[in-house]
Length: 105
Image (cartoon, rainbow, N blue to C red; front, side, top):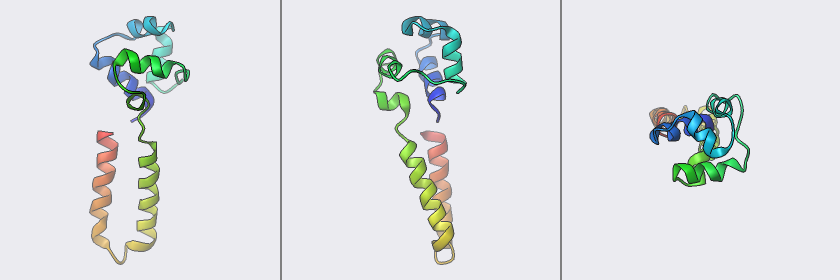
């Protein structure tokens, strides 16, 4: 999940409009829209404010999942390169991990 998607989800969960969030952050509604569509990113100083507004941790706002994606990519390449012939049944594990990371994180 991208930062923009996370901001949109948290904003919608609070049932506030982009205009209302923009007012709380002292930015324009267009800026919120650009964040949510990944055309721009919030200033680093806005992240703790967003966490406070949404009543979540900073990790929840930024999605501290980047390391999982890197780890999964590395494991997948290693599996395809070396383990595939010896352990063909592990492919279902990698598919399940990929699905979980894409849909639940």
